[in-house]
Amino acid sequence: MIKLNFDIKKHNLENGLKVLTIKKDTQIAAINIGVNVGAMYENMDEKGISHFIEHMLFKGTKNRTNEELNDELESLGGEYNAYTDYDSTVYTISCLEEEIENGVKLLGDMIVNSNFPEEEIVKERNVILAEIRTSKDDIEDLSFKRTNEVAFKKSYLKYDVIGFEENVNNFTRDDLVKFYKKYYAPNNSVITIVTSLEHEEALKLVESSFCNWNKGSIEKKDIIKEKNIKTVETTFKNEIEQSTIVYLYTFNDLDKEDELPLRILNNRIGESSNSLLFKEIREKRGFAYDIFTHLDITKDAKSLYIYTSVSDEDVSDTKKAIDKVLKDVVNKKVVFGDKDLNIMKKVHKTAVIGTLEDSADLCNYILHQELAGENNLEFVSDMNKLNTIKPEKLYSVAKEVLKDPTIHILRRTSGEEDE
Image (cartoon, rainbow, N blue to C red; front, side):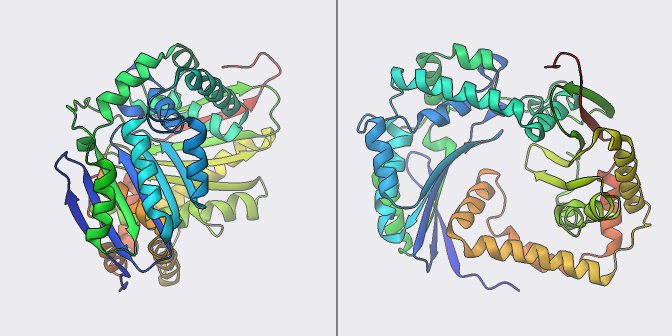
């Protein structure tokens, strides 16, 4: 049983903004705001606009120039960042407890009063275009993108969050402001704040900076949930030293109660340095420096990826070895004994406790639970469920998830680069 060292209170401001104050005995405070908009809500001609706007919110407000805003953020002495995902855009600040009031004020000014200076749009356009082009030279990043491209026909997952070069080149200030005003509204957002302040004090800080934010009229698009296409596809790129192999499984119909067993199973298959895939592909066969899995479970998309990079001559044998490991798990040839289960449970427990101990991680976790409409203390019930998970449940989940993958192989070619 985990002993909680914090407590949470939920509040709703008159303008519809959800605020979760998390009182914790800490010297490092954190505040996050998540806006319920990301790449999944964009039309084809809008692909990349959420990410562009995320960049622009650091480029000046009605009250502060670009230089003033970033100087004051830097003066907090902590960390500030932002990221755009498919379902949300998140802005984060973590700092000394004594700086949290300034942090809230700066975040409020960014979110409510950004003014999108034309000269900064020109600069940031070039930055984002450079980011897009750089990603093409990162074979890991490129491999995941190409896997998604061949795995789906209509799903938003087919397209990268960063968007298309053509769109980024064409976005005008009016386009950015219109999209910003449409989705950046208090009734489409959640704030989480971790601080040692009393709940009422923390709430007052947030209210003072966000109470004048005007409620919006939000219309969300219907989200297409698509099963990945079962296929093996190969594409090519010039001047790469290693070939890559990516497996993708989607499981949108997986029961909620099976998500925790899947997390435990994922750790055993490929998330740790003692995983089945790591031991087979690296330690036993020496095909790769690394092989890992990436599990993503959200409300609108559930996916599991396997990634490795190997010498071109080892691609076929590596794929056969991966297939065998996965087949042996599904067919129960891999035995999950008490020792294995105990290790997997300890790893999960360590990750949970690590999140609870770190103010920034806790702030981010609670934010995403609230954005997804999930139980904020789900990890507590998960910890209680850990001891009830039996090997048979892991096998049944493996059988449901590890089937009909999209497999993408990126290989070197002597011809023109395939884009």
